[in-house]
Length: 133
Image (cartoon, rainbow, N blue to C red):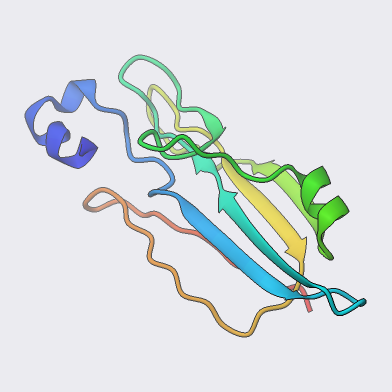
């Protein structure tokens, strides 16, 4: 929607943010053989607004969602969140900077995944998955 509005009133539309909500779904079995499923939002940041900086640690403006607190994930599921932090120097240039990106690294393994990230024309959007082993 913002992309369409930016063609009409570009000076009133915020820059692109995290590209839309991403949901991570993990499942498996605990040591006692009981099943678990984790459905977690990956939050990001909003781009710079017409008269203010962007906002960190939020979901897409069209959603009313949030990610799962680390304490909940770790106490109810067999995962450990190694890092959950703002990423320095990810806010972009301009008079009103974008919000800082977030990094969140749970200790878990996965075999494969698929993701599509979009941004405004001629701009770069990205989401990184890292495997530490």
